[in-house]
Structure formats: C-alpha cells, structure tokens
Length: 389
Image 1 (spheres, one colour):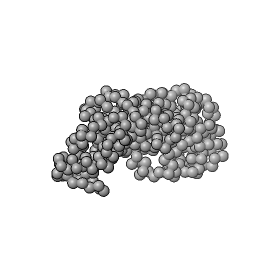
Image 2 (cartoon, helix red, strand yellow):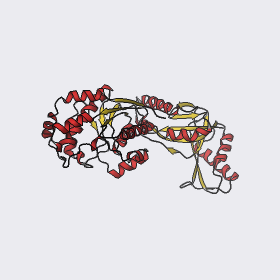
Image 3 (cartoon, helix red, strand yellow):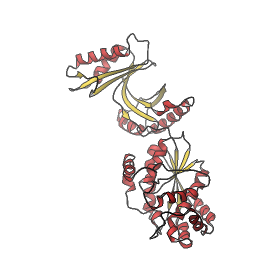
C-alpha cells in the first residue's frame, strides 16, 4: 500500500464547457504550491493526487494545500490495486484501534466488480467487527468513518475523514486586481477575499518616510508575504507619498486632507493597475467604520477612479468579523503592530466626514501640478516581487 493525498474541488463542478480551463489553472496552482517538495502530482476525472512524497513532509504538504483556492477538501489515503480481499484487509488496518463507533462508506466508480457499493460496505464492516470486536456500528452518527473509494483507474483509495481546504475559485481565473494595502487589519483581508474568488492580487502601499518609520514599510511587506501563502506570488509597489501629502497639506483645506489624500491614492493605484493589466482596484473599506468610509466619503473616493471599478469586499462586514478573518489568514499579529502609516500623517482635528463631491473636486483642483506629482510618485515606486515560501 502507498500513501497518497487525494484532492477534491468544489465550485468548479458548476462550470460548463470551460470547466477544463478552471481545472487546468487549479492544477498549475497546486503544482506551484508543491514546488518545495519532492513528490508526484497527477489528475484523473474530478480528482487530483499527490504521491511518492517523503512521509516527513506530509504535514507541511497538507498545510500548504489547505491554502490553495479552488480545493474543497483533501484526505490522506492509502492506495492499492482494486482487489477486494486486499481492500478489506486495508480497511481493517485503518479502522479505529480503540473502542468507538464506526461506519463504512463505499463509492464504486468501477462497475466491473461483482458486488455493488452496499454489498462491499456490509462485507467490509463485518470483517472489521470480526477483527476488532471492541468496535460497534453506528450508521447515523459514528465517531469514525472508513471511506472506500473504488476508482475506474484500477485503484482503490481508503481514508478516514477529510481536511477542509480554502474553497473558492482558482487564483488567476477571474482577472487581476490592484489592492490598496495599508498596515491595518482590513486591506489584507480584502485582498484575501478577492483571491478566493479567483483574482490575481497585486498590491500598492503608500509610504511617508520620514513622517512614518521604516518599520511601517516592513510591516506591510510582511503582510504581503503572508498573502502569498493564499494568493501565490504578489507584486508589491511601495509608493513614496511624502511629497504629495506635504503639497496637499500646503494647498488644500485641512479639513479635506483625508478626502483629497484618498482621491490621489486612487489615481496612483489606477495608473499602476493599468500598467499591470489589472481590471479593478480593491480596498478594505467597510461602510461607516471610520470617517473616511461614510457613504459620501466612499462616493468621493470612487469618483477619482476614471477607468477602473473599485471592489470593496468588506463593505458590509463589521470589525469583529474582519479581525476573525485576519486571524484565520495569519495577518492579525502583524496588523496589530503599532507602527503608523501614511493615513496618520497631517490628520485634521475636524475632518470632513460627509464631503460634498463638488467641494471635494474643488479642493483637489487646488493641488497644482497633480498629474506631475502622481507621475513622480509612480516613477519612484519600489517594486517588490514576493514569492510564496
């Protein structure tokens, strides 16, 4: 018997004629996740398999595969040629070795066998009870399930339970998006949620050194690295924003500082996004969470994007939900580090929280040479290619 990891996908079943495209992208993403390991990867109808891996790597492989979007679940199984006596013997070996209840589930894709699924399950259960009399059968709520999956490829896979995976759609099947990545809790979760829907995520961060520390920049780099575990490789643009903020502070009404700053951020992000072939911008805005996320503020921000839509996957989530997801994707501890980002620089005492769109446009028009400032910031951006490890 050989150990094998069986991989199952979920939502891809809903795809029609182009399902093979999604399956191909998922297979490519699985191979990328397996790149650090010595193993073999294969696929059959509705299944993927990881085989011939070092037993010492099994836990690490499972942990890596759990983060591949498009996979619904996985099981560590034993693989053996489909010969019923061998199948029964393997089922006995895998059955619990201490007092508990169990059930046998059989799926039989190979219709050439003399017994049907129910008959095989009954026979396997009877043999398990004979060899392990301390067990008892519970068909409705068993403590353990012995799964026997008889495939058409001449092999049978036997496993106990399954491990949930990330679900969603394979990254790369829904285009590209540019994430406005701050050092907070929200934007990493927003990027993760869009990646779960199949989007390839790029990121842009605005850095205001020396008003903010170099640690603030490193914090964001670490957040982007965490996202690579789920999103695959991430290209991060670190944009120098100090000069622009100083010009806004000097020329515009101070109460509109946040509004104008966010409008310029969107313009910069859109310029970079278009150069990367992205089809949207992504933000971590949640309606009403802070002053810059009222309906009027969001309308003002949206207005600054001339060619691309802005996706806000957190718009109806509360902070507790967002922080729970941050813990799930392992960005929480980094996000809570107390380094200030550019949004804390030149904060007005009384920021406008319900900006009139015409007033916002008028204030932004005071920023002389805005396009030159944007071009200068984009040209000075540091580009980091971050790879999953």
